[in-house]
Length: 221
Image (cartoon, rainbow, N blue to C red; front, side):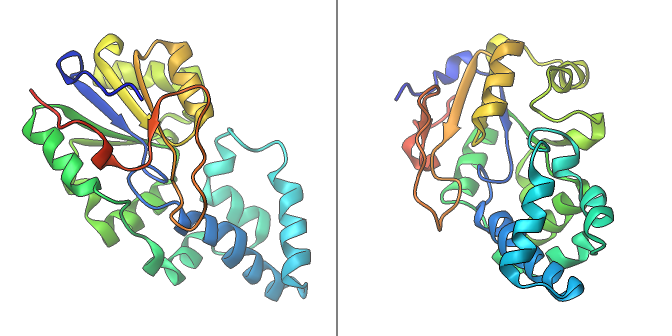
């Protein structure tokens, strides 16, 4: 793995779910909790409910609706944001995140969360973790009405943050997002190989990456 050269990095863009927070919460919510609620509401088995929901998943990945709680609430006739509170005990940091973010701050690096998560989900996770207190800014793709998979997202972000793409590092567990950022011109890219603590790691063939943040060299100013 190629470690970041911190002397060449001023801004660190950080995904939230699967990068800073354990993706197990989201996977459990969408693959277990929501199908169970949908099954109860519509008189289906859990398996039939998941199969029905999977039909709606097709074609939505990478679009803003895929990440929009309002969209899923309307589609399922379920209070999606409220349902998240039922399993909020599963929201937790990935290993070594707090220490890494604190080291970035001490080294003078700008720490910006860039997430596709809906603001309702973001706020719930911040209430549970205090993650927002460890970074300098939080951007949701819903602020721009463009997902990170879109080139327009990075255009909007650059206008607000005015970061130098040659001196910016993006850390994300999504290969599609890393590819989008690479096409746009962000120089330094790092994948997360173990986003869900309850699943096996998945190593990217296209991008260098880490399982946990303690694998990185300590940031310097």
